[in-house]
Amino acid sequence: MCNKCNYTIHGAQHHFGWDNSLVPAARVEPGSTILFHCHDSSAGQLGPSSTLDDLGRLDFGKINPVSGPIYVEGAEPGDALKVTIDSFKPSGFGWTANIPGFGLLADQFKDPALHIWKYNPETLEPALFGNHGRVPLKPFCGTIGNAPAEAGLHSVVPPRRVGGNLDIRDLAAGTELYLPIEVAGALFSVGDTHAAQGDGEVCGTAIESPMDVVLKLDLVKGANLKTPRFTTPGPVTRHLDAKGYEVTTGIGPDLMEGARAAVSNMIDLLSARYNMNPVDAYMLVSTCGDLRISEIVDMPNWVVSFYFPRCVLE
Image (cartoon, rainbow, N blue to C red; front, side, top):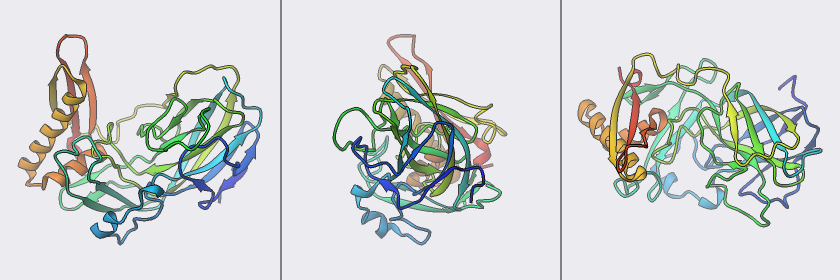
């Protein structure tokens, strides 16, 4: 229950892909507060007792379901939808996987791997990663956006100028997100909730976790945003900062190759120091390590750094 919510969008009211011809799950006035029951990115295909065999049977036509869409009365192209992220009710279950062909280092990690997480949904204490670590949690919406102007069905996998699969870990409680509107009513949807993720989501998955989300939707008329923007309520890394970071780098003329090198170097470091299986290190860093562009002006070489929080393994 959500006493302050004007509407509830149930788990059955979801869709796969963006399509501005979809019938709205609800029509709401600006200023409405809505409770969304969100599925994980597997749409429930993976659960607390899932195994590697289940990962191999994933139906990729049912990936990243989003709850909605919501028609906001008075919303017109050129306006912005202001989304105030109120709160989350996590489920206590999550999963992280290495899916062959997906992820920053897909050419290095070709075999499937799966880690099932169990965490306390009330206290959100750091979640155990086998014998290796404890990952601080920070629930957020991985996919959140409006329908695009282009007609037809569009994949939910790539992010778009109207939002979508942004995978920005700071779209957490208290954040105010502004999304461009391209169609009447905005046709807003949300899903792909995560219990934790590092900046970059380098293996392709975070702690994928179904949960309920409470959002408030407002209109900003004539905003003419080109892409999404957001405001955080305060610091964004306090849950990770306590013991500092181990940092590896990638240096060269290509930012993508620099990012790959920085992550690969961190996997090598953690594997050697903690006797971890490299694919486990790869999945772990995806949930809590951050890719950063440290320098992009001293041509011809740029510096990409990968920050891994020491509190996870110490």
